[in-house]
Length: 291
Image 1 (cartoon, rainbow, N blue to C red):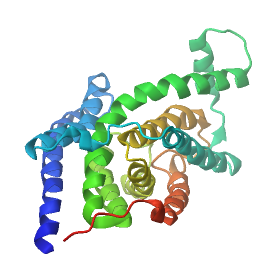
Image 2 (image 1 turned 60 degrees about the vertical axis):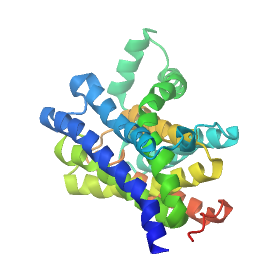
Image 3 (image 1 turned 30 degrees about the vertical axis):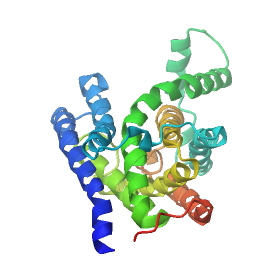
């Protein structure tokens, strides 16, 4: 049994080694420049595609069919929920932030820039915010998915199903979440992937959030059998947090400690969602038996 387990884990070692080697190039470029926006954001895009490219290379090395990565669409209800869930937990988190005054709704400077960019002149603030929400929620998702796909081919297309063969749901969620989080740390610690809090604080909040999210992503990937649930989850998460709720939140002094992926509120809400999907783990097909 031990030899069989080691044999099943070997592909993961190949995948992670290639991912690290490719990512190191973009780590250097981003850290050297000090910002994720360097190279017009193409360094960051390149980094996000490293896991996906690594998965494809690994499949080639192992002489496997890339169809095993989960390209089928699956049932649309899972894709719809994949879009809505990040919106729900982001809304809950930011509503808590606004109600308790840890951040204000809304950021007037940001809304003024929005109004000017739309070119509508004097028009209601509420209308501008709703219009921005709708347009970004639709078209921004497509743009966000183009980068999320690069990561998700690797993390949920290859890594999660491969881990699930030997580890089951809970361990797969924890292990893949830790790997996913650690992969982000170089740019968090040594570049500007942070909302302005101390590195130790940002790292702690981020790792808790990422591991919590991993339970959601793993559940949908195994339940649906589709890679696209993870792509949509990832794209929706980045979109609503980074492009809508965080920019709309006004800084009231210590807001950075509460908002975004590096503040305390989202990780706490994320734990609640992780627990919910952990409780639903029995709905998943059982992991293959190792003989």
